[in-house]
Image 1 (cartoon, rainbow, N blue to C red):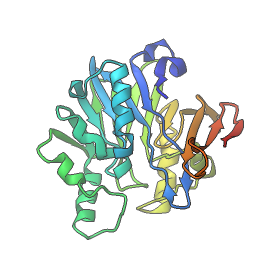
Image 2 (cartoon, helix red, strand yellow):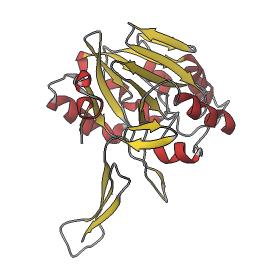
Image 3 (cartoon, helix red, strand yellow):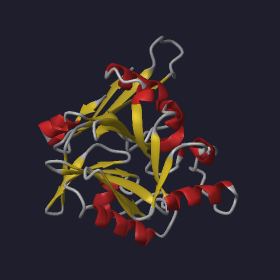
Length: 267
């Protein structure tokens, strides 16, 4: 499950982990909201980018535990936006200073006030930030010369992207780019602002980094206009359908870095 940064980007990324890889999948009941959750060190302190939803909570705590990290040790926390699948586990990290775009904070308040409709904004989004040490990013902010926080409108009015600068530049995209397929086809889904603005933000994002970790997919690069996948993606889905068996029906979807697609079933 956990992906080590050094396996993808080189030895300079030994203190970077994709704790929970994003999943680009949906059902006829809607989108499977499993986002990318990343952990790294910033000035020697632990920093988390996005937190996932309640469905991620147990696995997120397990991943931190395997690294011998207590949630109270997280000093910084960056939220790409305030949709439920990215922010609901914020309460697990009570000591973390929070970074969020000002536009998305204002947007969430408008949604909760009934001025704007966006069913994905968490009902307790503003409450989660109450009495927290919050820094609101307007357009761009530099942190210690190591990370650039940039605001891109589209999926939400002010999606926050973190660009980490080491031997290479890695962009933690949030849902500015949800998955590689949407980027290739220039067809962002679930856009809450202007569609053309969302497309332009996707294209501009490609200019600020060498590698990209989308909100709901595995890492990739863009070389000469072509997407290069940097790690495999897999998800296993199980369902209790057969009353005559004690084990559930399961299906695994896998995509290799060479774009190979595989399906496996267990009955």
